[in-house]
Amino acid sequence: MTELLIDHVVNWIGISGYAGLVVLMALESMVAPLPSEAVMPFAGFLIFEGKFSFYEVILFSTAGSLIGSTISYYAGLWGGRPFVTRFGKYFLLDVGDLEFTEKFFRKFGDKTIFFSRFIPVVRHLISIPAGVGEMKLGKFILYTAIGAGLWNSLLAYAGYRLRSQWESIRHYTQAIDIVVVLLLLAGLAYFVYRHIKRLNSKN
Image 1 (cartoon, one colour):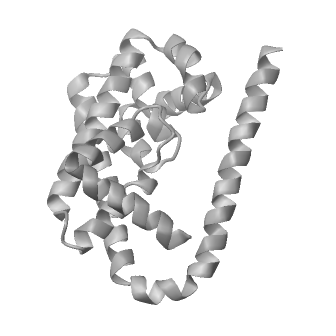
Image 2: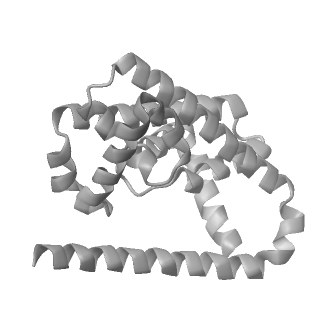
């Protein structure tokens, strides 16, 4: 099952090419529940297979991160909290997520934009409080590019190394399948929990 899932994701990215990578990473840097961990390692697979170039993967993935982050920045600048309140429910995000990210941003300041690229959930929302706080766009883009570039490079390299050792790893695919199933069940449970929590908050 793990190999089948990997083959489908790798094939999709391979077919869509660098343009698909830009789109996926743009979504990842916005409020869409699409983690970079589910994209970049597979791009690393394609680097190992010679279908992608490492430098172009980093270039286009970082460009996608910048596009998505900048859109979120302006959503914060122009829409702020009402934007998340109105549209966050479609992406499993709510005001609580935004409040946590806002506190994180206030505590650590502008450098949060760099460090947040390595933190799940925070990386999806951090651009919004940066916009709300009217952080200088040039500094925002610089920190985002450096942080996203490093994170994307690490994930792509991890995927490259994983693919290079795949013949050894495939002996343990049964155990990996169990982990994948558990992660999928955990994701489903989280979705149901968030949905129920949102319904209860309205009552």
